[in-house]
Amino acid sequence: MTKYVPFALLATVATLAIIPQAVFAAEANQQVRETNSSVAAPSITVAAGKMLYGPDGRRIASIYRVAANGDAQIIVDGRLLTVPVATLSTATGKVATSLTKTEINHR
Image (cartoon, rainbow, N blue to C red; front, top):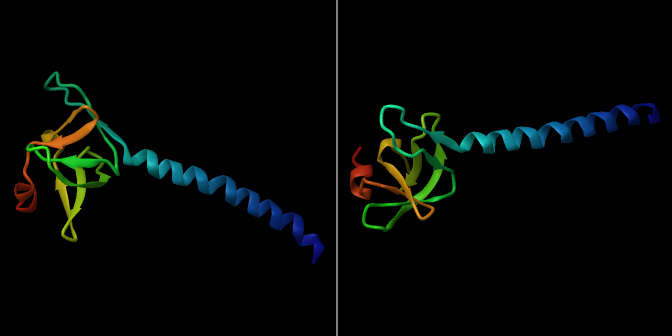
């Protein structure tokens, strides 16, 4: 039985070395930097967990995740909704959209 202990320890160390890298890679993929080359607009950095605000300054929802193309995805009333990156902007560290909550619900 003791001859298997080194193999068990090696397997444990290898597993613990791989798991954090996979978790951090998944978190890094949540942050997407979108640049629009056709318009000289500043790039928008959207991250999961940030609050999304409407054009009136009211909170809409927390950003659940960010799609590969930069669209923010939020959960409102149990539904996963997508907010296009073209409608997003940042001001004073807040992520805002030009769409109202009603417009997002009816997309």
